[in-house]
Length: 280
Image 1 (cartoon, helix red, strand yellow):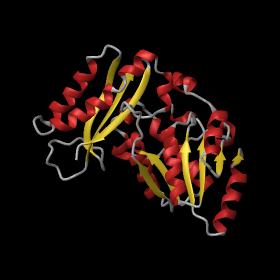
Image 2 (cartoon, rainbow, N blue to C red):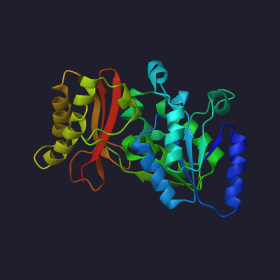
Image 3 (tube, rainbow, N blue to C red):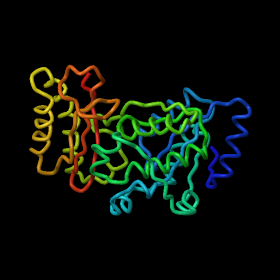
Image 4 (spheres, rainbow, N blue to C red):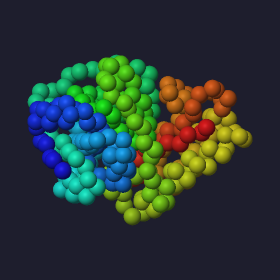
């Protein structure tokens, strides 16, 4: 496994590999790796000749300074995990390498970024767009792999890739879960024992909500989910919205001809967890 810290060195190496006709897969991460990340890497390994994983906690996508400060950083463990599963290349730059100057670019992300996460985390997706475009230009992969847990992020990155005409295939990978249903996330490490015991209620409630679409309206299901999760004193719903999976616009009824997804954000203590589920 090769470790690169400098973007110029990595780009030159990738160009050499591509000149040999090798297919490059890319998995961008913020480190604190878990089985969800490793699933992305394994899928990339199955479909590509060379897999690049980036480890970089991107400051521009955090609208909460405490969230950035407390975000887990475990580079030595991350590198050991990636080496164990046969990852080819790791790109682990520092902040100065990625942002030698402040990134003042503003992306027009439209309605995809104005709802849900965009509503409650102003500037978040612009920061995501900044770092992902930088990484795409450094790595220049053929395929890039993203988990469906961050469904809105996936939709926005797919849209940006098309808009900027990057010759990159965006590959969505289903959410990886713990045995009790909790979506794997680096933030799970921050949960107390009591909070960790309660957190699986989120996905359990979402699964029950799917069954209720036959007897309740969209609005009633949204209200039911929020009420169910609020029965736990340790959890507070920030939003739960049932939307068109392509446009992320709210749906009015279950008969709309589109893929329907429910997306949720829940504070478990001061740890913010997100999840989603398809309704059809």
